[in-house]
Length: 158
Image (cartoon, rainbow, N blue to C red; front, side, top):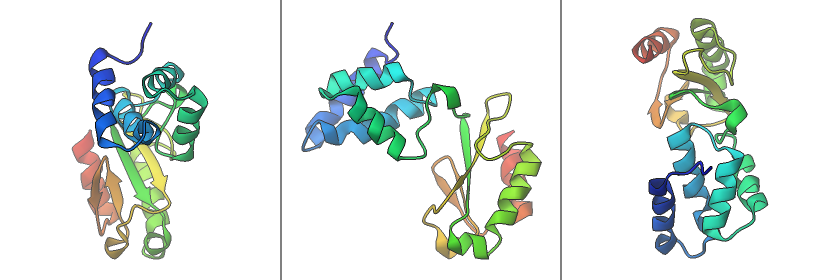
């Protein structure tokens, strides 16, 4: 039974004219599947490989290179709350912020809430050094995050 819907397959095929090779579509295809399913199941890897005329190993290699793609055993919550612990953030309280968020959410980094709403993660750098400490809430950078600001963000997610 296929994992990808016809719409997802057509959207992946729609990327083909935009990239120089089929292999170059691997990353956008993985993003699309991960966004839709909150993970990339092995069956989806096989289906992407078939569309792109690549081996499943090539798709899997790309997926595992990037830490933000998760397999079906580590399905993500609907909201991903990343706390940066890059150098600038660390020096401005990133570790403390991560610990605070972990306690507030009752989650260790990498865990998802029982209701499937929130996944807490850390990132080595989210590219917001000028606003350290920073978090990435889904795809939105939030900068100069204090524990109080983190509490507000978390409250808005629940």
